[in-house]
Image (cartoon, rainbow, N blue to C red; front, top):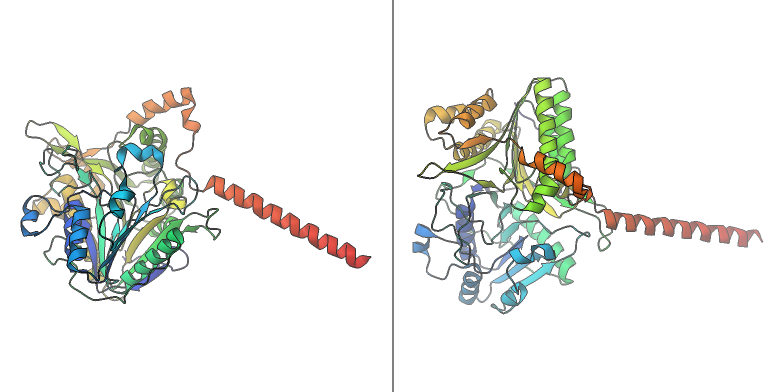
Length: 512
């Protein structure tokens, strides 16, 4: 059944623009390959926004390298295409990261990029609220092709869809191996890319103080047609943002993604499917509770999450809240008669040992009639503090069946990867919404399955330790720019008081 009417410009999105083609790209092997192909076709400009970059990350690996005629390391590749095309310009906007990440970042990065081809402009962006991050991850090629999602072009992100326990190509720039890694991006061609160009231009101007003069959009063959992506049968794509109000930017805060999640969950009639790195957003939690308590059809609710957070600090400050919220949701679902499954994917080595696949994607599907993908995690920061960007698709009045079938295909494709399913019988079970959680439970309980139930015991153990040390009182996942908002409120109050005093003085003066 259609849930038409979720996307509303001015409430939960900036705009909804038409596309010539659109779809999703799963895991970084295919995304990096798509980026390489699109950048190779660029004639006028490439715009790249991200949370993190590494100059030496390899865009192509293994069999994919044989078709490349140049150095495929990120910065060297950009140098090459700029040398071959003197009219090409590349603009890179990276988050001016907090020092707590300094050991996980490429050192002297600005100097490295500045010493590259003069056609490449690199800038660190710090125009955001205190303690926030610039987390938007998108690329625009010649104003016509674009990519939006959760993937950065940086170390320790590349993996293919097999997620093998041992992959000789899954190494960082220093040759160190890392574990299996899952992510999702989207691709688009057409007018929506022009809108993304304008978003980049505004942020570049705000961050650097300089205006970007760019050539008109240029149509081209930017997206590989090799069948590795999942096409979405949509004519329009909506763009949603998060941006906190700050001392540097006194405009109203933008919380379109927050509203988008709430509105989509409220509309759910049969299925809510969420893949995310985190789940600690109280706004999304409350929306789920309200929908489950409301009279209406019973839901199949599926969460695909990492087994654990990547760092100790994330476990302390996000993992505990996540455990509490998910356990509460399970209780509500059980009481209200809904089916909820919370899982993490694993792979098995030849000797039988299991290794979890880290889930970094930020995706939600509702009823196979709505899908959103972007940079926003399902945590508080992404709903109100950090600078985020999501794209969404919704079933149209005409062509609804084609759209629903394409979103269903994307969902089944993702679940087939997580479960390791390849038989027609298994794919049929993944396609059916009714009984989906029961089927995934059976896969998770099977020793041969590649999905496991999320038990969430470790964070609960840690919570007792943290309460004893009083560390759980420290807020690192806020939804609001607390410091900026308080200062702005104080300044506003003083200004109002000043105006009132001035008006009073004038009245007394006139009275005399």
